[in-house]
Amino acid sequence: MTLSGAQQKEIRDLVASGQRIAAVKHCREITGLGLNEALQMVNRLAFGASGEAGPGVSMSSVTTPQKPDARSVKEAQAEAMNAIREGHIIEAVKRYRQRTGAGLKDAKDAVDILHLVHHSSGRVNARVAQSVIAAVSAGRREEALTQLMAGAGYDDAEARTFIAGLGRLGIARTGCAGGCLRVVLSLLLLVAAVAAARLAGLF
Image (tube, rainbow, N blue to C red):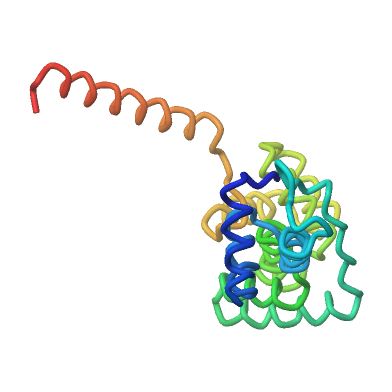
């Protein structure tokens, strides 16, 4: 992730005006970084030795933050699971990020695993949940079924019913490859038709 010169200036201007928190928030919004990574990037931009960030500040130039310790992760998982039980998935992601400083994608992935564990009433553990989500997301449905049967003791019918419900939970999108492509192509054709009609002066 590389910031443009204009984006760097926006962040430096916010820090210079005493709005350091706003600068970190803005940095996270435009980069998708976790809290620790964004903070380090802001510090590097605003307080570099030369006072200038150069033509670009990239992820490779930012010191990798320390990973949260096991206790922090465990506490984050517990708080996220409480939110999941209450039906508040977005809140679960928010709590996980606050506890660990994880980026949005990493937090969402972690919450998806917890959500699947909760949905299975504990029959599926975190390791199996992660494998199932990865397999379903990649379109490897049979592999996901095998994981459930071998790792969680589901029979074939239970496993198929379980997999079918993942899309409705928002945990994984199933059976989308062909359907999604058709939808995208249909939308593109519609946009093209509208553009052609406008050029022809029909509306």
